[in-house]
Image (cartoon, rainbow, N blue to C red; front, side, top):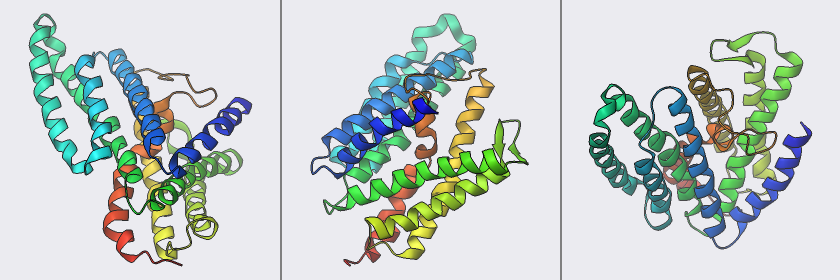
Length: 274
């Protein structure tokens, strides 16, 4: 727990500075490092599962997927994914001596790109939104909800947990912890309105908190299942007390595109200056 708190004490101020700084480049660089590291951890899991990926295709494609939202709308990444699909199919011809694993290797390569790099690229897309003061508020809200959901689930599970949530996927998670995480995520979103995001309507804060809390827990369970199915306890331990980058991103990845499109098509048209 001490290592976990120490890592958070170092990382959170850097993240907050990167999202509020007038220039987006620091946040974009942090996102790129985190996503490439998470891809590496995912490919390690795939290797352990008997599906060695075509990493020489995966890594450049991951970088391209993260880079596109810096200069264009994230939908342009469909072109990158199409190109990656073509490259993976060509790469299969270089591994004809291992025909039995071609299908799972190609699938693991592309799943890692879609699951981590493509979904994660929406964090960069959020940072690129305008007006200039909006991304800082949005990403601080995003991180506050994710972090408080994890914290609420942890403490509610430790103190009240009695009923297993998904014992075959993650034996330690409980229904009580899940409810605690949802409550904490809604409270975090509502608190964000009053602390730094006054123009955020309360109904939107509640909707975002509840939706993100639920999706974050689903993402956490999905990552746990990937590791359990591959007989991997931790994909990495690069972040003291937190495991690897994939462990930190798992609750964010499913949320990032949902949050982006909610902001663009639902929230932004209704935002008013206080």
